Length: 363
Image (cartoon, rainbow, N blue to C red; front, top):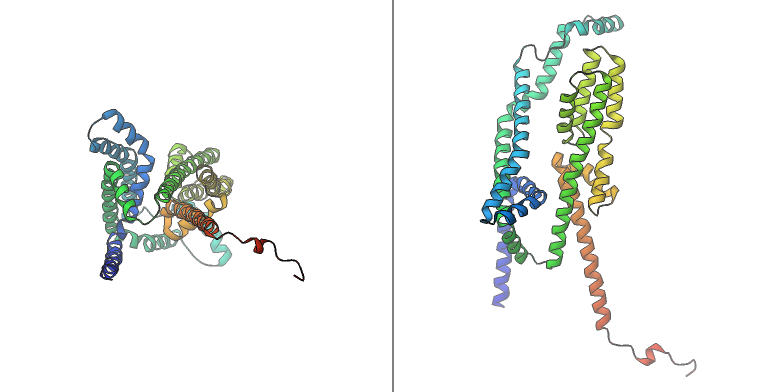
């Protein structure tokens, strides 16, 4: 009786402090998840370094972490800093948000003749500036807080990546001992995580490359001069689901319409962007996810769309992983139910001969 009471108290403490720890660590779950995915992706490089260096474990982990920082975080950080600087400069510039009055003259004259109003280019520019400032003003005000959280997240992800690589085996062994789940199921969940992580990353990169190539073809046909720059921006923008690529070709279409005064080129680029560039993303990702994981193409598509809708851009990664884990858990449940059914059938006492052959009628 005393042991049962002690066990109940321990379970209560585990639940209380577990929920408290989850509350404390909730803001770091995303960096930890990204670090775990980077471990899966760059695991072969870490194992190769560990085999050839034959030094302490931290050496291979440190070199792998440095490599990830160089090829992933440094370019991404430079792009974010450059984009943020350009946005701040545009907001502070007295003419940065103005449309060329010469471009607007013809449109304004036609609009005034049709409606009977008297609107000038300065009035349009003033309204545009108000709208942009109302949209981006709160973002600019909260930018320092967002930047601080981003820096902290990157630091946590980097440190977690190093320790996952250096002590991942011992961490996994310690965790598996605490989880009351058969070890074969734990390995099955780990394999699902590895498969889906690789599939999500490869599908995202492949979709971004294809979207950039298709958009670059559209920029070239439309007669834009900075085709390479726009193509590169489309690639990085396509990494942000559903919005990034459209922001690039949409802006290029507006430039062609209002500044280059090429209506047909603007319409053609917009049609190409809507029907091909932004649509191909919803085709490539389900196909790659289905090919590299056990997800059905429909589930792969819905997991990406639903993940983005529920969690934002990170839902591209979390959605497929959650659906894959659910699918694996259902498979485990079916296995356990089949095992229980077989055990019940095997432990059932053998039927008597009289039960198998009922007595003749009238007997």
